[in-house]
Length: 435
Image: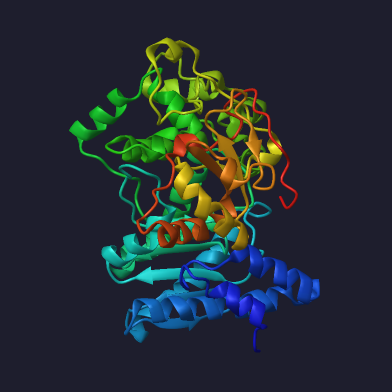
């Protein structure tokens, strides 16, 4: 099948074939094809896209396709043949263990990018990184645009474990669940499918792990913040999530029905506390105390970090006591606050982003009300100082390469604490017509 010109153009934007204009692709598919044809068209789109990535990364990479997967790999045909068989089996096992919870990719086949070196892996995922120092990773599931996962291939055994972990995230991507639950289930599926052992630490490091958690740091665990901090916070979060989940299964003797109900109802806004109490008749604080000892371990959402206007800009001492925070409305929860842009850069950046169909709002840092506006209501020539953009999550994969091309240097992603899901208060905004 030959794809129409408008889809091909969106798949090879100025930013390059690795980061297509997925908004335009999705719009074209919905406008040109009947709903019954969408799955087939998306598979053709995925093949075209992965071919572009193959050409981008050069000789040696081959594309392999199975019933449910589209894989890019530099491994030998013998190795990838065994991998494909194992991955199909893993998908069936995940659906068997999580019936009614795990769901197939609504777009097309699962795409896996199996990079031969960590350098190529990090080169690919850089646009999805936050600013500043980031924890190292052995793989990543990217939900924006066309959901897919990427990881560096070290050896077959470890690669299969990473693949199953990220595949579990893909199968749960339709759910809004606390991050600690998402990661705990992904690690549990590693054990079920790959027969791996529980994450192990030597006695000294394990003691350090337990000492790391206190009434303050535990809030970052429940909210998800701790997973994105450099240093030991990330591995300690994985360890705690895995250990708590084992206690749910063994100490609480959770049934499969109870686990499935918890996965279906756990709310990230409270770390899963309400659902946990309803199903298991215990609080998450009780669960944590069974491991960490007595203390105030329960989730306290009111203590979770808030986004502060102008957090990267200098403020006079007299203003620091009245930092303004804002609450984002539910319809804006799919947008992410980005780093500052100067007025000069805004003159050329904003029209280009509009041209490429990047969905965004403009946040004027100098506005007393912290108002969000569209480009129509806040034209570039009226911008007097720095602004921030709130960019739709699905468009971030294209936003960063486009900004890089326009400004001539990489644009770091905003820190995870700038995710604005039910964090801050009093924000006025002008609704975006296309959102």
